[in-house]
Image (cartoon, rainbow, N blue to C red):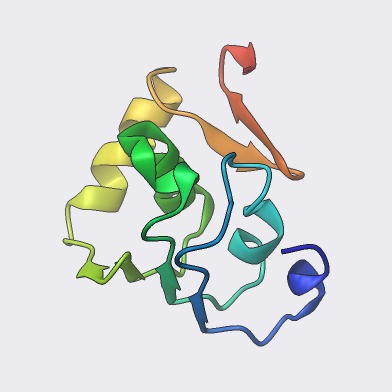
Length: 102
């Protein structure tokens, strides 16, 4: 995904079935606003609900993740968990929580 963060017009990105294991490996794509649809199915990063939650919290424009439309209450709920330190967020390509680096 190196270089995809430079593409500021990305709206729909399908990275399924790629060897993406960490949040850092998708950080550039997540930062590529106005991303609305991201597919990470069958990637290592999708094996963790917490990692997927971090993608949602980190990308304010995302509406569909792994083929599933986000609910109206989902993002605010995850943002509250992040603020309380229970979920991480991507900042400058690295996962962090309000408690510090993870």
